[in-house]
Length: 218
Image 1: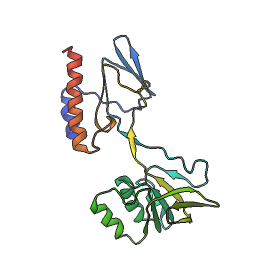
Image 2 (image 1 turned 180 degrees about the vertical axis):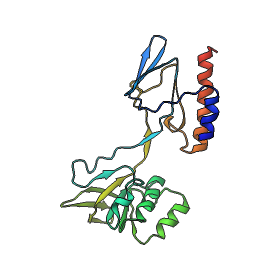
Image 3 (image 1 turned 45 degrees about the horizontal axis):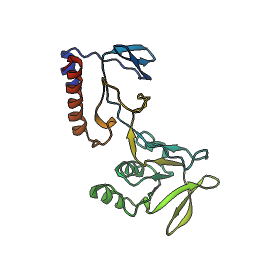
Image 4 (image 1 turned 90 degrees about the vertical axis):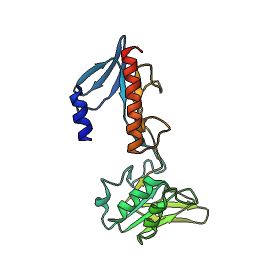
């Protein structure tokens, strides 16, 4: 990425670190509001990635719910945690947690996990990971959660829940829900793309070329 950045800088790229909080329309372009000031441009290219889908089963409960385990795993050393989800994100983060937690309960609604075979094998080799298929998680009592499925209904005492039920494009800057003429979307932020670095890079090149054609009036 540093090589990409140096190459782009040689062509005039200016990098500013700030959070974009609002995208506005102007008579001849767009404004991007940040805490450190407002930027203006004739066009905008959004590469905002994705966000985890919200999971509300435990809203208002006493057990904390997180959307990512990678920065939290060490905090649960020797404790019991639950992971909700059956895709590759849930499997990756279950493995991450398994390196620290005493027990990881992986709860998902499907009959089988949807990740690649290698991930399934690695999970099966972890004695502290317990998988609950065809099940859902609900609030329990006194620091517990309840697992309900076709073949079981039981309580689990856990210190935290990690909800990884999928991702969706992060397009909160588009207040109308769609990109107006002059705004381009690339990478994971574009619905229907494969969430891989190689795919995102190629998609960004496509969007950049379309943006250049827009700016040149072609």
